[in-house]
Length: 468
Image 1 (cartoon, rainbow, N blue to C red):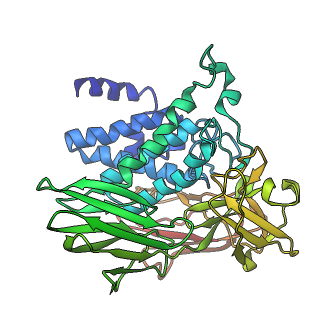
Image 2 (cartoon, rainbow, N blue to C red):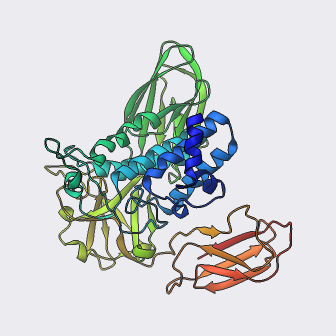
């Protein structure tokens, strides 16, 4: 701990992670927003566990959430040019080491909070950026796994790290397997007492020690993430009263579950399905996970584009499944994103899934899972042209929640283009949490900020909302 205190003091001249995180500063705005700083952030969690000081936890959680909000790309990857820049749409390199570090940080967030939505972030990174950074042959890893572009072996991209006899040994090729290995730490976890937490929903078998020393084996038979059927069978000597907590993804609206054929009434997306009972060999859980198609509407560099997801899987155009190059991808109509599955028996590198959409002009567009897109060296695209799309997501920036502000004037800001030509915002400020009786309302704003010059009352809580 004494050594850690010395490092903590040195932080002040580096990223100042503790004080900046405690103040609610977004990670990309701190003095050192490099990817290597994520390991310092992991130190904040350890300091909290050692000392019990809630300030360390607050700083850690604030910084993690700001990375999730502003710098996690559509692939689940982290970094732009090996750093955070506050823009998930930037076309800069998404380095494999950075995404591995982001997954490690997110694993820390999961063990700290037990939040199933954090486990969803791990799944997002795993099925897309992490699997996509290893060639399906298993032969090599990338340095950069871009949202659009081509995959290239790290030994080619960062050839300066090449050494005689070990040309493919570099930072990414040795760091990347951690992304796969960490699955063993978050796929299934122990909760309180004999609670078993299941985060990974694909097929697997895991053996977990119980408090009394017996072993519980859980076998999952599943066609997730491409389809909805999930089947769980426990095996143990005798019986055991415990709670199985199975993660239900936040997008899985309409999912159903049954134990031994008996329907469970409440299955809530974005939460754990908690089943407490006396378990024995021969019991079973059937979960039908509704897997929708959902989208992320682009902004900034990706304005006029969308990313399309099939459950946790990002879909991408790949030259090998279409009769035209990437510059001829048809524009999709957001109001008519009908799709149908396509079953292809390829000779090499079988995709997890292929879905066929139609462009607004009727041209077929086949999309495969991002992880196998570009496996033959072909170009792939995960940000697709679209029309009739809703406004892109945005986040309020300042003032932060709970921040003290002067009486006047006050600058309110949110993410988005400084001046927008294709969308407007509505701003509301009120003393009431339900935003009734607003004291300031401004319509048809084409900027991502507003100065409120009306004097505000002292010792008063205010609530504000921006809609596009």
